[in-house]
Image 1 (cartoon, one colour):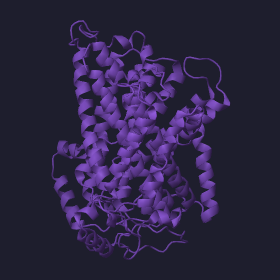
Image 2 (cartoon, one colour):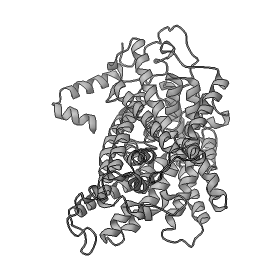
Image 3 (tube, helix red, strand yellow):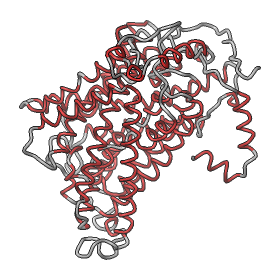
Image 4 (cartoon, helix red, strand yellow):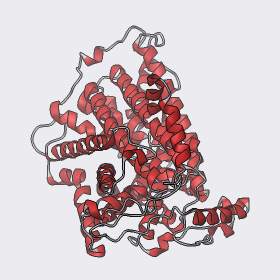
Length: 578
């Protein structure tokens, strides 16, 4: 087989209709790239009226613009989804389950997301598709399930956007609570619109800068916390003498028993949500084959250094019985007063540290809002390109923006104003319940799609040596991820039917559906997808693993593999992690 030859699809017993995947043909891609670079600076960056006109379609589907660079992918991977769930939500999790539950549950979820992202990386390098997560479900599992996962992901981000706007407003009220929440919501809604005017480059640069800021703040926190644990805090503060692990003994490592332990899983899942966006962003990078594997490897460091190590110090320095971890705000994820990171600075007597951490929370929340528009709009465009959404959402303008898809997500922002009316918070909470478990279904589908892909890959006579990038745990890693997701869903079901941690008895119907409403919604989408497309579960023999594969330079890939094989064992191991 030649260096860039793509194997012809083998004849299978029967073929399910394949969706119109994004073309990987060099001719179409080069024509589109030439057209893009012929435009002037203002058109390419969405800064004039000409940029809003439809771009050259050429043969096949219009591709999104590939302007994202490796540095963007690396920062999206390592810091993109670090947000209020980590900086603030970890406080309520500590209060419910104790420091050991916090550390164990976030570590378990870290193992899960590590395997999810590696599985996604393997698929994304092989098959160049935008809106990739649900497309893999369509191709390797069931087109109806792919329909459900696509719309589930769109709804998740459409609801997250007004939530993040509300949280931005609550965060700003830490400095001035006399200004109306509506003013802050409007300011940040406009800010998100401005970022999206610049298309993928606006998202990429915003994520690069905000991720650098968040990572710097987290590293500074870890270093400060290490000094405080050793008793190096300012004189007169709580940590001016050796502190150690006393809080793991009194009040204790665990709190509220099994219910407390299970309840922390939900917070951990929320904190990791958005990690999968690196796979979506890869579709708009210049060379995903080179850039994506390096970005995927950064996930390990984000999990171990920032989440696990950061929360380990939180559990050492803040008591799980500290009532300040409980927020009186309508949406506690925006209340800096309930952030353990802020409380540590306050207790230590570090002047100004609380304001700095509040700024970190604000930047994090705004970043997630921008990511919501990006993730939701790209998935909606991919749904439309496959005939699962109205054709108007296939519109891509001359600057590479999926214009109507972006507008569809952005117009959900004003739902945040519901919080200004008496019944608004109740309505908004039910909207949030629709997307409560959305990320878990997305992650589970990625793992199962990878498992099915590997089985079909072997069935059609291929070997894993033909894969340019392999998930570090292989099929076993995806099974681990899938099993852990199932365990989390069971834990969430358990916490939904019993009383909240610290109370006895059972919960009520309202609390159950607040926690588990996403499940019947996903099942409804699945049924609608089946009624629309009339296609069911794919057999392994029906799965097409050869059509529209990315063209690869195997001479270069094999030369690199030979180089790696010549390295000593320690360097090969390091290459897996960096």
